[in-house]
Image 1 (spheres, rainbow, N blue to C red):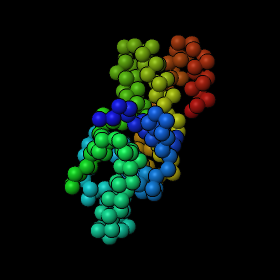
Image 2: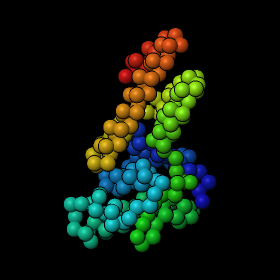
Image 3: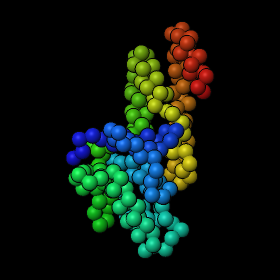
Length: 191
């Protein structure tokens, strides 16, 4: 088990951070796309076949599987350097792989949790709602994974952007109701 979790930032840019390590470059763009996919969908296991077909659809089946193996080896060397127990971040077997959810954090997960908290308090506690929405807006540093154009990224990019704009509209409405004009102005300028 890692003593310090990896933090992945996917809103506005893509990077992985752990203490003084900041990863922004990966072996290939496909390697980065694989890692982004694993982080984004960290709560489930992924079939090696599915990932090879999804990311290397332009290659023959054996070549795609080999590309996946090479990408995984590269990611393992970056995320589990010497001295780090094997499997503490990347959990793999012959058929499936995933990231250890206890070893990672992501800005997307935090953003969605803040939006969920805001919805939970929307009808009962406007102060909690405003606080949660302000947290969500602060976490949203830009569109999801700029420079990535996989189908799943485009779909999720739009969904998260809609959540961000809904949060801004709600904050503007609530701040005007409470006569917090500076907050209303700040949120209006962000929209």
